[in-house]
Length: 229
Image (cartoon, rainbow, N blue to C red; front, side, top):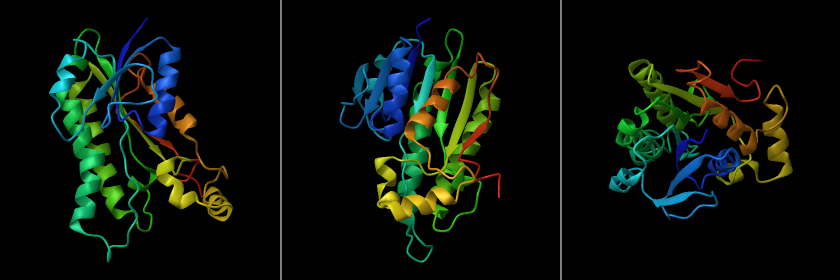
Protein backbone atom coordinates (compact mmCIF):
# COMPACT_ATOMS: atom_id res chain seq x y z
CA UNK A 1 0.00 0.00 0.00
CA UNK A 2 1.36 3.45 -0.89
CA UNK A 3 2.28 5.80 1.93
CA UNK A 4 2.78 9.55 2.14
CA UNK A 5 6.24 10.23 3.56
CA UNK A 6 7.63 13.65 4.49
CA UNK A 7 11.43 13.93 4.50
CA UNK A 8 12.80 17.13 6.03
CA UNK A 9 16.29 17.91 4.70
CA UNK A 10 16.34 15.81 1.54
CA UNK A 11 19.80 17.01 0.51
CA UNK A 12 21.46 15.17 3.38
CA UNK A 13 23.31 12.05 2.29
CA UNK A 14 21.19 9.76 4.46
CA UNK A 15 18.05 11.51 3.25
CA UNK A 16 18.99 10.89 -0.38
CA UNK A 17 19.46 7.16 0.18
CA UNK A 18 16.29 6.91 2.24
CA UNK A 19 14.39 8.64 -0.55
CA UNK A 20 15.63 6.07 -3.06
CA UNK A 21 14.48 3.20 -0.83
CA UNK A 22 11.05 4.76 -0.30
CA UNK A 23 10.65 5.54 -4.00
CA UNK A 24 11.50 1.93 -4.84
CA UNK A 25 8.68 0.85 -2.54
CA UNK A 26 6.24 3.07 -4.42
CA UNK A 27 5.71 5.62 -1.66
CA UNK A 28 4.63 9.20 -2.34
CA UNK A 29 7.48 11.42 -1.19
CA UNK A 30 7.36 15.05 -0.09
CA UNK A 31 10.87 16.40 0.33
CA UNK A 32 11.96 19.70 1.82
CA UNK A 33 15.22 21.57 1.41
CA UNK A 34 16.32 25.18 1.68
CA UNK A 35 16.89 25.28 -2.08
CA UNK A 36 13.69 23.46 -3.01
CA UNK A 37 15.64 20.97 -5.13
CA UNK A 38 16.94 17.52 -4.16
CA UNK A 39 17.92 14.31 -5.93
CA UNK A 40 14.95 12.47 -4.44
CA UNK A 41 12.07 11.73 -6.80
CA UNK A 42 8.99 13.31 -5.31
CA UNK A 43 7.31 16.61 -4.58
CA UNK A 44 9.99 19.23 -3.89
CA UNK A 45 9.29 21.85 -1.21
CA UNK A 46 11.44 24.88 -0.44
CA UNK A 47 11.39 25.22 3.31
CA UNK A 48 13.60 26.33 6.21
CA UNK A 49 12.82 24.26 9.35
CA UNK A 50 13.11 27.41 11.46
CA UNK A 51 11.30 29.71 9.03
CA UNK A 52 7.79 30.04 7.64
CA UNK A 53 6.28 26.57 7.49
CA UNK A 54 2.97 27.52 5.89
CA UNK A 55 4.06 25.76 2.68
CA UNK A 56 3.68 22.47 4.59
CA UNK A 57 -0.04 23.16 4.95
CA UNK A 58 -0.39 22.08 1.31
CA UNK A 59 0.75 18.53 2.12
CA UNK A 60 -1.82 15.71 1.93
CA UNK A 61 -4.36 15.65 4.72
CA UNK A 62 -2.79 12.48 6.11
CA UNK A 63 0.92 11.60 6.40
CA UNK A 64 2.20 8.11 7.16
CA UNK A 65 5.81 8.97 7.90
CA UNK A 66 8.01 11.85 9.04
CA UNK A 67 11.82 11.94 8.91
CA UNK A 68 14.00 14.81 10.10
CA UNK A 69 17.47 14.65 8.52
CA UNK A 70 19.29 17.99 9.13
CA UNK A 71 22.29 17.82 11.42
CA UNK A 72 25.69 19.29 12.24
CA UNK A 73 29.17 18.18 13.24
CA UNK A 74 30.63 21.03 15.27
CA UNK A 75 33.57 19.79 17.34
CA UNK A 76 35.20 22.33 19.65
CA UNK A 77 36.82 22.41 23.06
CA UNK A 78 34.86 24.12 25.82
CA UNK A 79 37.46 26.91 25.83
CA UNK A 80 36.77 27.70 22.16
CA UNK A 81 33.02 27.10 22.18
CA UNK A 82 30.66 30.05 22.23
CA UNK A 83 27.00 30.45 23.01
CA UNK A 84 26.45 31.04 19.30
CA UNK A 85 27.97 27.61 18.55
CA UNK A 86 25.61 25.94 20.98
CA UNK A 87 22.64 27.94 19.70
CA UNK A 88 23.38 26.94 16.10
CA UNK A 89 23.58 23.25 17.00
CA UNK A 90 20.35 23.49 18.99
CA UNK A 91 18.61 25.34 16.15
CA UNK A 92 19.45 22.81 13.46
CA UNK A 93 19.32 19.58 15.45
CA UNK A 94 16.55 20.20 17.97
CA UNK A 95 14.46 23.33 17.42
CA UNK A 96 14.12 22.66 13.68
CA UNK A 97 12.99 19.11 14.43
CA UNK A 98 10.46 20.31 16.99
CA UNK A 99 9.19 23.08 14.74
CA UNK A 100 8.53 20.92 11.67
CA UNK A 101 7.22 17.92 13.61
CA UNK A 102 4.72 20.01 15.56
CA UNK A 103 3.56 21.83 12.43
CA UNK A 104 2.52 18.61 10.68
CA UNK A 105 1.45 16.71 13.78
CA UNK A 106 -2.25 16.88 12.98
CA UNK A 107 -1.57 15.24 9.60
CA UNK A 108 0.51 12.49 11.24
CA UNK A 109 -2.31 11.68 13.65
CA UNK A 110 -4.89 11.15 10.89
CA UNK A 111 -6.15 7.78 9.61
CA UNK A 112 -4.03 4.96 11.09
CA UNK A 113 -1.38 7.23 12.57
CA UNK A 114 2.25 7.37 11.50
CA UNK A 115 5.89 6.60 12.23
CA UNK A 116 8.45 9.36 12.87
CA UNK A 117 12.23 9.01 12.68
CA UNK A 118 14.85 11.39 14.07
CA UNK A 119 18.66 11.20 13.95
CA UNK A 120 20.93 11.59 16.96
CA UNK A 121 24.58 10.64 17.50
CA UNK A 122 26.53 8.09 19.50
CA UNK A 123 28.02 11.07 21.38
CA UNK A 124 24.67 11.84 23.04
CA UNK A 125 24.99 8.78 25.27
CA UNK A 126 28.75 8.21 25.18
CA UNK A 127 31.04 10.92 26.56
CA UNK A 128 33.36 12.03 23.76
CA UNK A 129 35.97 14.79 23.71
CA UNK A 130 34.98 18.02 21.89
CA UNK A 131 31.40 16.80 21.37
CA UNK A 132 29.67 18.73 24.17
CA UNK A 133 27.65 21.05 21.90
CA UNK A 134 26.34 18.45 19.47
CA UNK A 135 25.82 15.95 22.30
CA UNK A 136 23.70 18.48 24.18
CA UNK A 137 21.59 19.24 21.09
CA UNK A 138 21.07 15.59 20.15
CA UNK A 139 20.49 14.65 23.80
CA UNK A 140 17.64 17.15 23.84
CA UNK A 141 16.27 15.59 20.66
CA UNK A 142 16.44 12.06 22.11
CA UNK A 143 14.61 13.11 25.27
CA UNK A 144 11.99 14.98 23.25
CA UNK A 145 11.42 11.98 20.99
CA UNK A 146 10.98 9.54 23.89
CA UNK A 147 8.61 11.85 25.78
CA UNK A 148 6.64 12.48 22.59
CA UNK A 149 6.47 8.74 21.88
CA UNK A 150 4.84 8.25 25.28
CA UNK A 151 2.45 11.16 24.83
CA UNK A 152 1.37 10.33 21.27
CA UNK A 153 1.03 6.54 21.54
CA UNK A 154 -0.79 4.65 20.13
CA UNK A 155 -1.36 6.99 17.17
CA UNK A 156 2.32 7.57 16.49
CA UNK A 157 5.47 5.47 16.78
CA UNK A 158 8.53 7.66 17.30
CA UNK A 159 12.11 6.40 17.22
CA UNK A 160 15.64 7.77 16.96
CA UNK A 161 18.72 6.44 15.18
CA UNK A 162 22.03 7.27 16.89
CA UNK A 163 24.85 6.56 14.43
CA UNK A 164 28.57 6.88 14.93
CA UNK A 165 30.59 8.65 12.24
CA UNK A 166 29.46 7.80 8.71
CA UNK A 167 30.96 8.45 5.30
CA UNK A 168 29.11 11.63 4.40
CA UNK A 169 30.22 15.04 3.13
CA UNK A 170 29.44 16.48 6.56
CA UNK A 171 32.12 14.21 8.08
CA UNK A 172 34.68 14.82 5.33
CA UNK A 173 37.02 16.86 7.54
CA UNK A 174 37.21 13.97 9.99
CA UNK A 175 37.82 11.40 7.23
CA UNK A 176 40.04 13.41 4.90
CA UNK A 177 42.79 10.80 4.46
CA UNK A 178 43.43 7.08 4.87
CA UNK A 179 45.15 7.55 8.22
CA UNK A 180 42.10 9.30 9.71
CA UNK A 181 39.75 6.73 8.20
CA UNK A 182 41.76 3.80 9.60
CA UNK A 183 42.03 5.42 13.02
CA UNK A 184 38.29 6.08 13.16
CA UNK A 185 37.43 2.58 12.01
CA UNK A 186 39.75 1.10 14.64
CA UNK A 187 37.78 2.80 17.44
CA UNK A 188 34.71 0.73 16.54
CA UNK A 189 34.43 -2.93 17.60
CA UNK A 190 33.34 -3.85 14.05
CA UNK A 191 36.48 -2.08 12.73
CA UNK A 192 34.75 -0.08 10.04
CA UNK A 193 32.98 3.23 9.50
CA UNK A 194 29.28 3.35 8.82
CA UNK A 195 27.78 4.29 5.48
CA UNK A 196 24.74 6.48 4.75
CA UNK A 197 23.21 3.51 2.93
CA UNK A 198 23.31 1.45 6.14
CA UNK A 199 21.69 4.18 8.21
CA UNK A 200 19.07 4.81 5.51
CA UNK A 201 18.07 1.14 5.60
CA UNK A 202 17.45 1.41 9.34
CA UNK A 203 15.40 4.57 8.82
CA UNK A 204 13.36 2.81 6.15
CA UNK A 205 12.65 -0.03 8.59
CA UNK A 206 11.59 2.44 11.28
CA UNK A 207 9.10 4.04 8.91
CA UNK A 208 7.17 0.82 9.50
CA UNK A 209 7.78 0.96 13.25
CA UNK A 210 4.12 1.37 14.12
CA UNK A 211 3.23 -1.82 12.25
CA UNK A 212 6.23 -3.59 13.80
CA UNK A 213 5.38 -2.72 17.45
CA UNK A 214 8.40 -0.45 17.99
CA UNK A 215 8.33 2.98 19.60
CA UNK A 216 10.34 5.16 21.99
CA UNK A 217 13.64 3.55 21.03
CA UNK A 218 17.14 4.95 20.54
CA UNK A 219 18.70 2.65 17.94
CA UNK A 220 22.48 2.69 18.34
CA UNK A 221 23.86 2.09 14.85
CA UNK A 222 27.47 2.65 15.77
CA UNK A 223 29.52 -0.48 15.09
CA UNK A 224 29.30 -1.40 18.77
CA UNK A 225 31.02 1.77 20.02
CA UNK A 226 28.39 2.70 22.62
CA UNK A 227 28.14 -0.73 24.28
CA UNK A 228 31.30 -2.77 23.60
CA UNK A 229 34.89 -2.33 24.73
